[in-house]
Length: 381
Image (tube, rainbow, N blue to C red; front, side, top):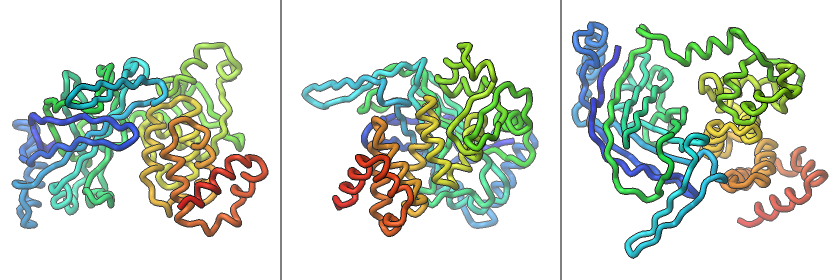
């Protein structure tokens, strides 16, 4: 059952790209409540419950807005070609991408007064569903189940960020400065406690946790073996896809050793199977493990997700030794300047543990060049 919040509304948006600076496009819609299915008793009842809550609490769906934010990025900076178009009026930057190999990724955020004023107190478990079409390409995004009250992050913009990045396969070129382009948007609120269909993520979650017909094993560095499926690994990683096309030792033994902790292996599989990053959001150590693994095994969407997570976390969230290891890793990876800067920012904000840090002392013993660069950057206040 569902309620329309926005139904087939035309919008215009400048789908800006994220390069060295963040660039976003925001579209606002007025809320217009309506049952999502004609003559559907369940949708009618859900609409009635939501409307009654609004009226009872002196709220109003009229005049409230939903904000939808679009952010487009490249899955891999290194493989794309930057092209500068310069004329008398403006300078445009575009980049060519191999859409069939590494598509552009689009991240979607929704928020606004309606979600803040109304859904924060609504006592039903819900999801948000977006259906939109742009340049002939259709996109569908469904949020995770929202907690009660409405799971509102403290970002100041009352927005809920969809964790899944959408692959854009039909845009072989993308311009940083584009003209406004049209599209149509539908936003629904879905009631979760009596679902009429089984969510695909629930199925893939069951496949992982019930170990249904597993055909491969990832080994943690402590020797623990975690069953999984070759198909899920290959879908997310070009390294695994190429590996499984050979007769290498890993394929013969149906097992691959990793440098991940056991918790890191489980966190990795949760993302690959059903886009879950809960373990990473609670641990800077696991987040760094996933970042390194994503880079090593060419898991583009996971790498994007981990970079954004680490860049968005507060300085206090990072464990001290983890941020030193993040700096060491970011220093040696091309196009990780933003993460290197984040690590230096965290270290500058709380330099006290530097003297007693085991990781920092190890830098001077095994990686003097990294330790010296960090020392100079921290001094450069």
